[in-house]
Amino acid sequence: MSRSEALVSADWVEENLNTPGVVIVEVDEDTAAYDTGHIAGAVKLDWRADLQDPVVRDALSKEAFEKLLSAKGIGNDDTVVLYGGNNNWFAAYAYWYFKLYGHAQVKLLDGGRKKWELEGRELSKDEVLRPATEYRAQAQDTSIRAFRDEAIAAIGTKNLVDVRSPDEFSGKLLAPAHLPQEQSQRGGHIPTAVNVPWSKAANEDGTFKSDDELTKLYGDAGLDTSKDTIAYCRIGERSSHTWFVLHELLGHPNVKNYDGSWTEYGSLIGVPIEKG
Amino acid sequence: MCGAPPQAPTLPPNVDITKETVIYGTVSKGDAPVPGAYVRLLDSTGEFTAEVLTSATGDYRFFAAPGEWTLSVLHNSGSVRQPVSASGPGLVEASLVLS
Image (cartoon, rainbow over all chains, first blue to last red; front, side, top):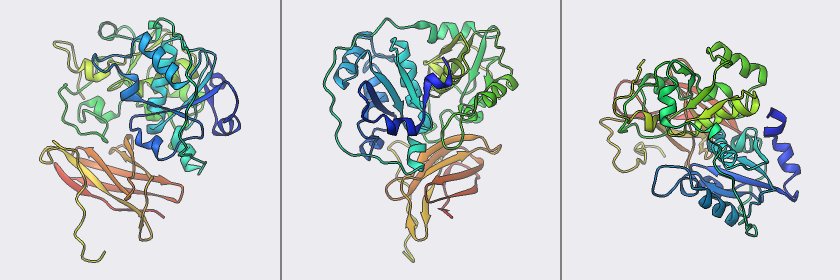
């Protein structure tokens, strides 16, 4: 995987708005954004309502993912172009999720909704309806997904990258500061994790930094490229952004996203936590 | 607008402002509030902490912690960068004017 395969520009999207086989998908934490205007023809995925199991804390089952994509009119052979708010956090999460279920052609719009808006590009309020499909997913590819036991076993042996802000890493904050701070879990980070905030991989307009800048960023942080890597954050969305950088842009071979992340780890009984 | 009391931020239910440090305010240009502006909260080292979009009335809100912060705003009509200090839990207002 490389930048040219995984990323598309806003110009490319504008040129391919009506290209058969290209489906544009907006993914947000707050779906009000989509309803105030979206890229013409884009369908909506709600991170919480559509992509989380409604009962168990987990990704959707394979069958539920198939049903969702079928209803949204996304076919197995379609090229899915994802974009969203929050600097593409949730779009990157959806990208990881589409890969988890084996979708062949997925791309991320560089800069997401933010760059599109800052450049004053057109947004539409027209309702988007696509004919239903018969989507078939593959079994989860757990080579890109880490679970809690792997996160604990990685202490001192694999690269652990905590991509939250420095104040969350140290334990001063328990959540990104657009959310209330009262949380049940403890503050701090997994011992031996390095802190490389997701935001260091992005420019202020939400686009990704260059490959050279990214290589230097993780090299300077002490990431050992001979080791496997697990990225985590609070709920697994910002770490999808970093997973995307390491695995899809820089081509590191063994990178997993720990989507249980701090809300799980920081609530486990008896696991080691480092503060400061 | 002269003499109008400052607007308290709209907070979700169950938020305890004796515990939360809420940094809030309005982004404006000229006399008009600016909806859809990207407001970033940076920590004392200048590192990104959070980002929100202003509401239809130009309002933004963060749940931070006591300390020194910087607010940075991007919009297609202008930008602004401004420090803000929170001495303890409670409400801290910062009005941001684009130029």
